[in-house]
Amino acid sequence: MAAGLYIAFEGGEGSGKSTQAKILAKRIDALLTLEPGGTELGAQLRKLLLGVGEAPVGSRAETLMMAADRAQHLEELVVPALEAGRHVVSDRTAYSSLAYQGGARGLGIDAVRSVNDWAMAGRWPDVVVLLDCPAGAGPRGRRSSDRLEQEGDAFHDTVRATYLELANNEPDRFVVLEANGTIDEVSQRVWSALADRFDWTDE
Image 1: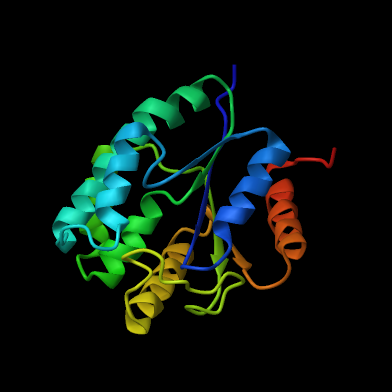
Image 2: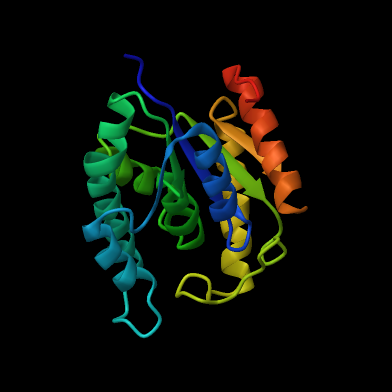
């Protein structure tokens, strides 16, 4: 049995990636999951990491907690589904940590990559759909509903710049798409790009 595809949706706050991940997962009958929070342990870590009013979390602790969520996520959900031949669509993956902690927190992409590579036993997404737009200018906007969303414009500008740098450095893995437009317009961009890459056909 062939392994499933591990497809990541990435982007800044308000880019619409969660909506598009749901649409694609339904269309290809994939397991839909998210980071942080895809597992029971992850839900607890998500509250600590993103909850407004929770105890302060330093940048290095934030990185390690994200990696811990990811380790559990891969072991418990992602890898078993892939090995069973099912596609997995994840709303955020380790590339979020490279952009947010490695880039915007200033901890260094290489250092954060190393931590996450160990946490995931080297299992990175097969393809990353990056929905790109200026910080706060996406279809959902930035609602400041969690601790990371409440960071300032300079932080989110750096997140975007880091994502684009990652995409430039890994062109065989990344698909960069314009995030703005109607939900249907963006979903068609996503489908066209992936159908071309994987030889998918419309139902």
